[in-house]
Image 1 (tube, helix red, strand yellow):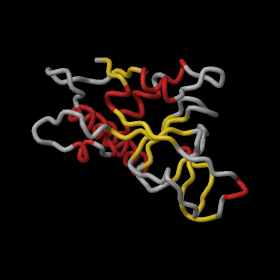
Image 2 (tube, one colour):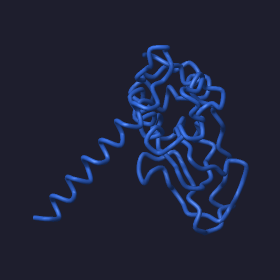
Image 3 (cartoon, one colour):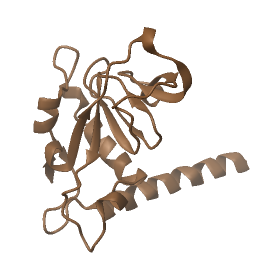
Image 4 (cartoon, helix red, strand yellow):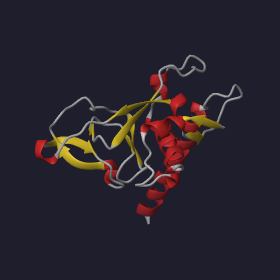
Length: 171
């Protein structure tokens, strides 16, 4: 079923941090790149964009690239931060905080990446377009996102990959 990003996520901006103002450190700085999980520098700076357990979506640079950041990091002003809405209806008393886990976030990352082909440097994936963008997600019979399915699916993929690695290393 199609869901609008605005109905699933709260979208927050990153904050400009110039090269001249960067102080070397151990905190990832997330920029608008398509590699290294979006990490472009390691800094000790902090600002209003410091966040964790969030999807970073490039609206500039490598437009549409999406990465999951479970760790504390700060974000360039070329990257939007997406958090699951706290107001999402809850199934069986499950809190949104428990939904915002690695597996669900990775599933949502992939769903957003499916839309990447629509956007480019000349047609940026800015906040107004993000709010109108729909993504295809599994749904429950009452037309809510099926969080349990998303988590189970991603756990299964992870398990299959681990088994594949184990077979490789046992040879």
